[in-house]
Amino acid sequence: MLLRKALTVYLTLVWLGLLVAGCAGKNPYLASYDRVQEGISTKRDVLGMYGEPKFVQPFRDGSEQWTYDADASSEFVHQYHTFSFRFNKDGVVISKYKFTSKWP
Image (cartoon, rainbow, N blue to C red; front, side, top):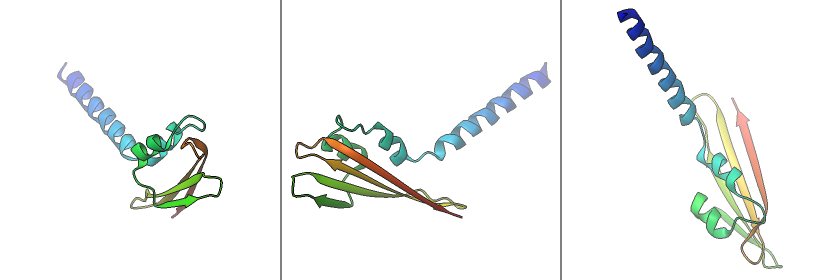
């Protein structure tokens, strides 16, 4: 009985450790990128998810492109993300782009 209880506690702790380790590796920028919807999301939505953009590129037709950079490097893998969102003159997302680079 005592062995069974100890095994249950041990397995629960292992499971919780794996859960925490899995969540720790998630990049919030990547999760937010999937929530941005073309034709629906607005500048306000993107600003709320990412904050102020690193670069703003205005276009003659009144549209803008906002660009963000995110470093998701760890001890063993270097990973860098670039996200761009293009908005029409009304501030609605008309296209989005994601680039990820990795190196050992």
